Length: 68
Image (tube, rainbow, N blue to C red):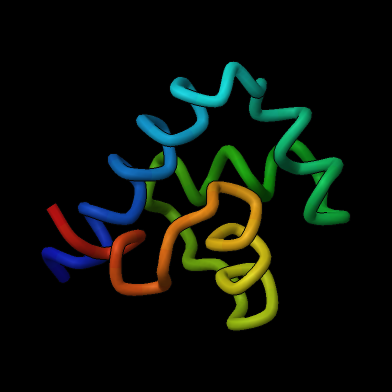
């Protein structure tokens, strides 16, 4: 469960570092803004496909998305 909390925190931080909005990230993933927002709020977990896309988008490993 700790990893999921880290994921939402890390997504917010990484998005902030890149200057992207939640809408920007959602568009790049091909999902709705609300779906991405739920990832950052820790309400839902990305699909494996979107998890991989997020790692590529933010240029981090899958492990880095869950750590910290």
